[in-house]
Length: 241
Image (cartoon, rainbow, N blue to C red; front, side, top):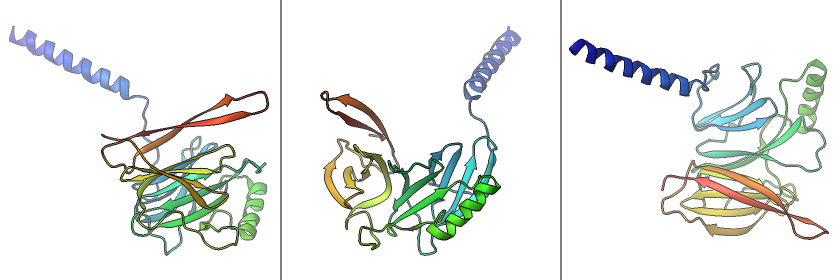
């Protein structure tokens, strides 16, 4: 009887392990980063995941999903200290070249920054690579440079007292010109990227503070009348409350 009970327990344990392995099978180990990064910010671009720095680490890489390989892009400037920053892909409705994108990096703890990068794929073929290298020299491609306003002066996003450590943002608006910023303790601000001005500040309905949270959009087009449609943007954030 004792042997039978032991066999039954062993069988149940094996079944449980088998079930665990089955449910976790969709996840697989990928090639390690050349440099370990924590609190890194990532942006998807075609078959690439752009990995932009980490906590106190300035390295940026492109991970090719199909090739399972990394390529170095650049480093953040030497005077930038990363600690809880955020990176988003800006939407340019006038850009006809979908091989090139613009990234915005800002936020952090005590050492805040506001930088942009015009990115051209580091995985291009030889002809495109020559073109990309030429663009890098002429237009500061694949390197972080200060965000500048209409007067070509460096501009920092954020007010004195805004706590942007672990800040999370979304791009929205009718022309993808609005930056929705969520940050500690439970704040949300809307920044106009065209006018370089804040247009709204409000408080999120959560009891606990938010930081390093998840912030995603759920947008849809609503028909207002025969002449035009209006874009409605719904935002979802996930925190432990």
